[in-house]
Amino acid sequence: MVNHLYDGLFQPLVGKQTPFLILSDGDVWSHDRFIRLAAQYAHTLNAMNVTVGDRLAVQINKSPEALAVYAACVQAGVIFLPLNTAYTADEVSYFVENSGASLMLCASKSFESLHPICDGLSVRLETLDGASEGSFHEASLDKDDVFDPVERGPDDLAAFLYTSGTTGRSKGAMLSHDNLLSNSQALVEQWEFTSDDVLLHQLPIFHTHGLFVATNVVLLSGCSMRFCAGFDVDALIRDMPKATALMGVPTFYTRLLADDRFGRDVTKSMRLFISGSAPLLAETHRAFEDRTGHRILERYGMTETNMNTSNPYNGDRRAGTVGMPLPGVELKVTDPETGVVLPQGEIGVIEVRGPNVFKGYWQMPEKTAAELRKDGFFITGDLGFQDEDGYITIVGRGKDLIISGGYNIYPKEIESLLDDQPNILETAVVGVPHPDFGETVVAVVVPRSDETVIISDLQDVVKEKLARFKHPQHYEIMTELPRNTMGKVQKNILREQFFDMFQST
Ligand code: MCA
Ligand code: AMP
Image 1: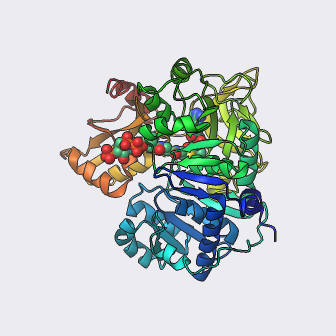
Image 2: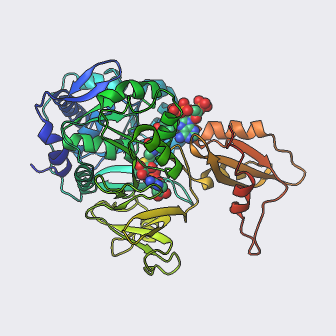
């Protein structure tokens, strides 16, 4: 039976005793151990009546078991829907309802808060924790450790990843088996991964970067990864001499540079440092080279497209650029108003087409049509230009988006929540530079006349509803927002006003 993604990523690893996951406590998972657990989980899904085309929502901590759920979904034809562990119950409720998930897996500690939500939506809720604990794992213990993968073609769906929008609520990006497989093939080739590599994995596994870039590349090349529950600079410095590659967001690199222990000795065995998800400052790129002799390889992608461009492995890795389109990816820079292709060197909106581009937003045909052209080009909303050597530089975003430590934050979501407060007239949320996270959130609030706004009240509201990484780090109360003659709020003026606010912290 053909299963496009399973056959590409997992089938070649069946029965292999080679190391796959090296955990911080020294435990090593072979490929074989992982594949057998994934097969048991696939049977468990079926036993819980979750089958081909159904959605499985998961909000669980990073662990080998969590990765095995992904592998189980692929072979059972179930659509995998990973959720940020920082999301509040309120946020999770939307994703579960919108996706029509038939089962949700959560960490045991979240069961109490998620149970009423899942109950209300008639969604079954089971628990799964690391160290082989939780009701889902228990249900898998008597299951066969071999599973016959169901038939799935290149265009069948493998995963939904929710991405927020500049208006309205999050959209479920539908990713197919071939979106994921073709992109990992391009990356393994481009970055020359082999079974000898050891990747330092400290990213979360609920987003494209840690899951579809890092994990899929490791699976496809048959190499291993040092799998850490979260970012841990001590572990990075300790493990780096036993590793060959690192994938991280820019915060990883600025934090490494801030550590005096980090230098040429520590990086001796490393062949590749990759950065993405947010702009890497050219000064970080240069400081890293000065300290280690390594040039960070920056690449550019999106949830909807996986990876689009990469600096070359063998050629010139240029600071401040995201390199060239990956093999199979077409890229053009267009006029944001007309969609017409601009002459080389001019700044416009980046559009991409290729096997990496998603199948649309789940049950949102209008939003899909607005961003995915009929000819297959996806309008990224990122602004950039291509130089005469083909390198792409991203200069900004046409979309109102803040990226903090690699996490996307849509101002609209925070503004809507604050605007709903009875004593608030209007709000503007902007991103300002932050030394650790790249950007952070500032909320400017205008009270209704004769009303008083207490900042700690706003903090309480935000804390209840939104994940911690979205919380404004500063609230400013103003009597009115700056507007242009058309009445549009001038966020650029607010960004300038608060530009230096966190620079010296
Ligand atoms: C943690 N906090 C944050 C963030 N992370 N606040 C804002 N932005 C963040 N990114 C909060 C914590 O809850 C904590 O709050 C306080 O900040 C300090 O936490 P700290 O211990 O410093 O955080 P950490 O656990 O070390 O995490 C920082 C991190 C992490 C390592 C940068 O955010 C991370 O792993 N980011 C990577 C995200 C990622 O994978 N993005 C890829 C998306 P308190 O003090 O109240 O407890 S995929 C994508 O973008 C596309 C496809 C692409 O191109 O890759
Ligand atoms: P996400 O919605 O999480 O997939 O985030 C995708 C967005 O992250 C892109 O549209 C870009 O704005 C941004 N991004 C990803 N990689 C880079 C990069 N190397 N440089 C600048 N921005 C990036």
